[in-house]
Amino acid sequence: MKKVASLLALALLGLGLNAQNIKLPEPKKEGGESILKTIAIRQSDRSFKDGDISLQDLSTILWAGFGYSHGEKRTAPTAMNRQDISLYVFLEQGIYLWNAKDNVLELIKKGDYRKDTDRPNGFASKVTNIAIVSDLDKYDVKKNHHTAYTFGVMSAAYVSENMYLAADGMQKNIGTVTRYGGHQEKEVAEILGLGEYQRILLFQTVGYKK
Ligand SMILES: Cc1cc2nc3c(=O)[nH]c(=O)nc-3n(C[C@H](O)[C@H](O)[C@H](O)COP(=O)(O)O)c2cc1C
Image (tube, rainbow, N blue to C red; front, side, top):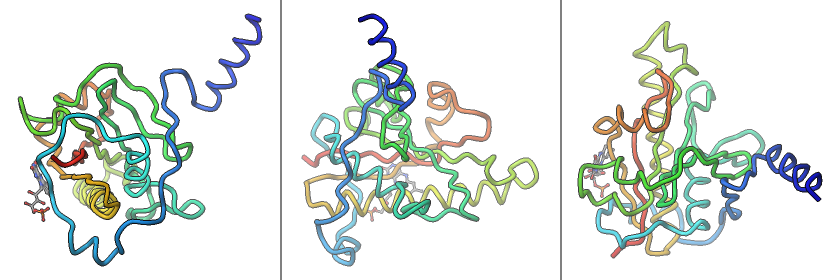
């Protein structure tokens, strides 16, 4: 029995599915408003009901942000197709790195760190936050920091806009706002254990509107 349990644990680990990770439901790739109407209604929201969004809605928003669309293509463009963006999800129960290939949230740290992405008592402290992180090393950052940083910032902006459009287009009372990552970057990078050239460029706050 013990042997079967450890074999099962090993198999799950191999799939990136340990008990701490969360396998997300399939993202919804159809429905909602038309893309043009969604562009017309897109806006930033800052008034949310307390609580994280559902795993179903989270899955759709992450996929829209930087999922795999067809083959190795991503839903957002990146310079030279370097695919430099990682998405870290802050939920009440912990922080997760989104594994886009398997659509799994991989546990980074247990605990509620959502407030660490915001100013004290800010509007983002009790809802889902997604850190949009660029790995500037993918752009030869040591040779040309300015270009690498510019490319990373641009990638992050496309990912953020896709998340806006998913949130506003789904018609599920989801609100979102993108926030500058620089204010809290040092503290949050430490919590996440990021490398020197992994930059937190934006936080995408997502919640159900009040
Ligand atoms: C790069 C960038 C940084 C932003 N930073 C913040 C922020 O730190 N806090 C915030 O509440 N909104 C932030 N915003 C959202 C803007 O305030 C918002 O997009 C702008 O007021 C226009 O409103 P709209 O998005 O509803 O059209 C940011 C937007 C961008 C593009």
